[in-house]
Image 1 (spheres, helix red, strand yellow):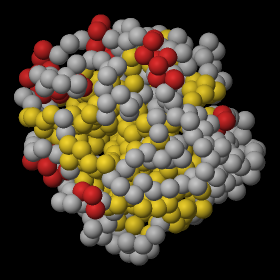
Image 2 (cartoon, rainbow, N blue to C red):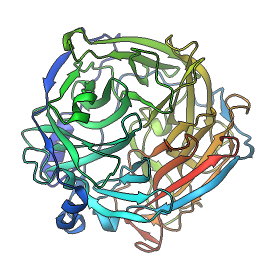
Image 3 (tube, rainbow, N blue to C red):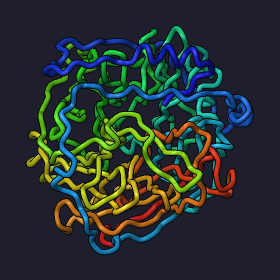
Length: 530
């Protein structure tokens, strides 16, 4: 989600929303090759942060821009047709609490919605929101770098990325293969859409960064999502022609050298790809492509494309597919797209959700005898629930590694009366799965829940949820907006501890009803992961 200073820009953005046709998917045969518009090495972030501007005052008047809505003539399943609804929970989730940290707040950032995500590194945890970046000691939870405008990383850079303009859709990932941080956001003006990518020069998130700007002209980029893979940093952003898959030269960016971007022209039917993000010590099969997955054109399909990049000979790069993966039929929650439908207790307004896409991240892991990817999306609950949204989750497998992915298990995790949405899912080295989500109803104030399953649990089933942060206030005055993603990440030190970052409402900040969101970072692990 981007933030704009003038409503005229917002209106113009609506006029450029994609128009989709319900036709057979095609693969763009020729990659588009470009280079960074500018790159350099920054000063130490901790030093630049001393002179960073105050977001709450500088961005008090910013307005949120609504995300594009999918419109591909999707064949919806019928209400009640979901065959993997879970009406009865397994016993209480087998996890132990590790840490709980209060993260960035709206009164610190000045943004109407946070788009919360975070990642654990070797010794630090980083949370990034619109428009702040905060660094914690992951053992104690102590703040190392207080909330700082994330474009401070590009202070003194010049070019499009050095300046407010339109900022948003931040992502932070830990590249555990190189022990580096990957920090990204978009920066848009009337004349240029830029993706700003920074790669730390060490494991310290408050140190210096190799900084890159990739320009896309007047073609408005939106909702970019990224992933770490051995041969590239892969990403996808929504443009007026569809979702554009790209690969960025990871080795060059780690070294601070000029970097190549290899992209494939968007296809109108490809709306919101999520690239596979590597977890764990075992690499994908040698030369394996990155996997880009999205919702298919029917409500019982996911589609998987394989992106193989060749930076030595960029024109030989390939983006092949789709591999259609049949899944249990679903019905998009609240009719799909960007809609305000989630209830809160009075006087709270109905909250929005994004139900027309898979949510961040697509977590990948290689177990040696098979590969797994886990993903999630909000869907309409089954007949035994009065809520408006539940969380559908998937585990896709390729057995043996290097083959074609297919569905291994799926479930729709619902509550009898509480709506569950804006989730994120991950998997630890033991094959246990954790799913975090927002939770709200006419009697439950917006809270943070998580659930999970042991690898030995019955397929498609999750355990009784845990309340990670109980909401004590309701949202009013933010136009029903809610963050467009959260994140479930895995600690690289033990490959067992899950870190979940999500927004909620806490009356300590703004009172019992306000637009002042809070965020919470929750760390936990399953008992059997050693």
